[in-house]
Image 1: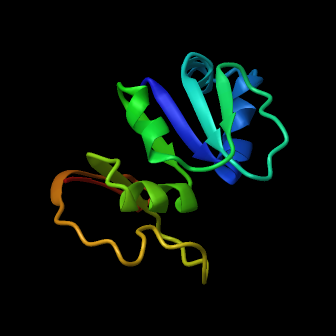
Image 2: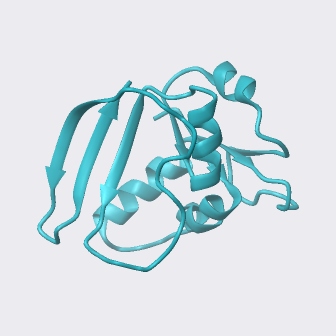
Length: 135
């Protein structure tokens, strides 16, 4: 991955990795990955970003994403919906978790139609299923 692109809420959830000092090797590995990747946060309400290698954009602009190049991960329901509508993806990765929470945001946006091809699946011991679809 070369760049992470987040909405405000996802960025606020993930920024813990910038300062995390956990003794578990897998946690250390991901924290090191996080710190080494460029990040863009699209937010109208965030005053500033507090993590290294991070820039703040006020309005979603598909051209900003297109200009980045390399491997980009877009995370956050509202931001991902805008990226879907702009056709800014090659691969969709979904994790289906065995829990009913009674609400939340849609995984895929309304009003967007595209044909997808299942390219990978993986089942975890806890019942979670990973699904990857290509355009």
